[in-house]
Image (cartoon, rainbow, N blue to C red; front, top):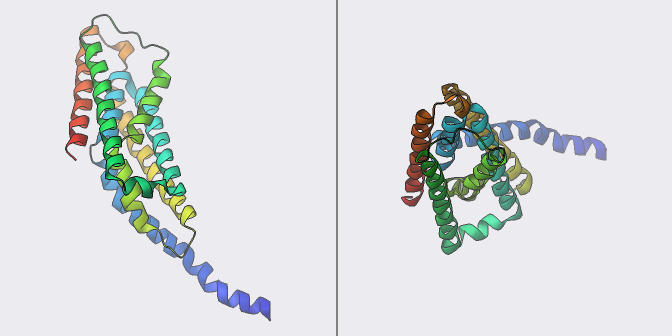
Length: 222
């Protein structure tokens, strides 16, 4: 008897829960995908790396960006996001740290573009691209606001909040990785630094540095 009552009570929930979760996930995807595709610090950084270092560099930058958003996912799960969102001073400090960091990267690229005979890609650059992508995402206010302001709108209080946050975060990271991977593959066809003449390499690095300056201006104007 009790087993029958339990089955009767939970059968509708089991049938409707996946539909509701799928609908919510699709709605969340439709909301964040245009934001991901909008040029911002992450996209400009990945683009600059793919232009200057080829597909592999763009993919490493993409990996770093996705790892950076894992940090935001953890913050949401731990509830720290609420504290940051409620503190304008802390948010502004993070925002301007991100701006300064992008300017620093741009200056390094432009400085390299002004120097001749730097065609070899240092072995440390492989991990550096992942690290820089990571920091770019962690310090990106656009990404922070997606996690702090948009993601909570798709969480239902009646369910497990950490689980829902994890699923929505995974969806956001998945689409970031997909979009930036396609971008890296498309731009990487231009060629890697090792195949470029010094003159062309300097032009590309100068352009990449200019793109990061544009990203910093974009962030400062938000």
